[in-house]
Every structure is written in C-alpha cells, then in structure tokens.
Image 1 (spheres, rainbow, N blue to C red):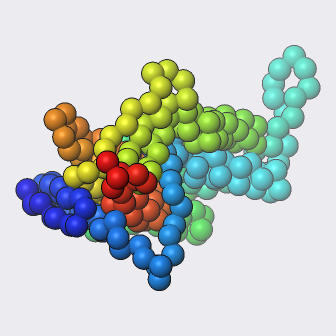
Image 2: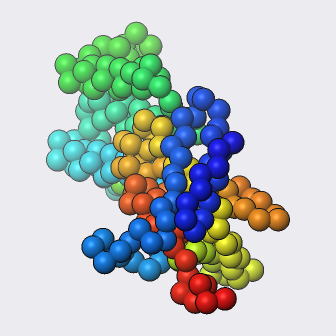
Length: 269
C-alpha cells in the first residue's frame, strides 16, 4: 500500500493483483487550478451501467438483416387458415452472421476477455465466419449436417431486434440513471431518485483506480468505457465499484480535479 501526500489531501492507492493492471489515479493539490489553468465544471455525475449497455450490436445487426431480407428476400406463404406473407432470404449467411453476433455478445458480456491471445481467437472466429459467408460456403457446410440450415424471416429479425432495442434504451437512458454518483469539490455523493435518498463521502484521503483492460467490452462495444474503483477513508472505509462507466477518461480527469479541491468555506473553519 502506498500513500501519496499532497498539500491539502492524501490519496490512498492500493494496487490490485498483477493480472488486473489497475491504473492508479492521484489527485492534484487544490491550488493547482490557478488563474492560468481554466476551471472545469463544479460538479460531475457518474452513471454506472448494467451489461445491457453493450448489447447495441444485436439490435443494429437485426435491423440490418431485416432490411437485407426485405430487399433481397422472397415472399413466402405461411400455411395457416388465413393469407399470410413474409419475406425470407434464400441464403444462410444472414442467419449465421446474426446468430454469431448474438453468441459473441452473450460471451463477451459474461466473461472478461483480457490479453491479446483471447482477443485474437475471437476475432479469428468472427473473420472466418464472414469469409465463409462472402464466398458462399455456408450452404455447403450445412449440407454436411443434413441441411440443418439457419433462416429467419424479416418479421423475426424486426421484432426480436425491436424488443432488444426497447430494453437497451430503457436501461441505458432511464433505469441506469435512477441512481448516480455526484462529485463536487471535496465530496462524493451517491444519490438515488427513488428509495433511501443519498449518502455522502468526504474526499479527504480518497483513492481512485481506473480499469479499462477488457479489449471487447471496454474498447470495442463500450467505445472507451471502463470501471472505476473508489476507496474511501475515515473510520468506516468502503470500496465502491462503478461498473461500465461511459467516457471514463474524461470522467476520471474531472473526478481527480474535484476531489482534490477544498470546498468553499472549509478553510475558514
């Protein structure tokens, strides 16, 4: 454990195991933001998202497959008591790519993919699937399995993707925002719009760690997201994990500046 002293605060950084490669974040003194360095916002909100935030490729791929089926598919009559038409693409390529996308998202959001070797294996499998679809060999592959083909109608693509999109949108922009962390000069507050209210922590001696080492979850699907570990100080020390924080780079920089500042009026007490 290492203690880093500054003029007004001490930030405690405790590295984790070597395989996680944490990035310690230290706070600057409160007087660092002088007249020549413009001050940023006086507060910032941090939202922790569920793993559903990474499911956007599923509904995007589904809508693309529905459009391709409508443009290049053929009408098919359903054998029911009334007339029913739907579009089905004659090739297996669309179904294979969509099922692979769904499978990879399930795997990536439930298992951490760290290291170059794991990433290369997944990328290699995805590339092989696309190449076989491009040269039209998937139909030949399915003949080896008694023609157990993969075909989805345009309605299946559209409605399943719409359900995923609605769940994704409500989770990311509504439910995940019902609880958030607000950072103000010298203070960290957990606020909940419904329930038990809020809980505040003094930033004196607080430590931050930024984790962004999952190739696919953080960089590819999360577009630069990451996890933040916060260690509070005082009589009741706590470890707070903020998972799947979007735009983590700018958020951590703002948090680092705010927790190092002394709140107004604190010097007079």
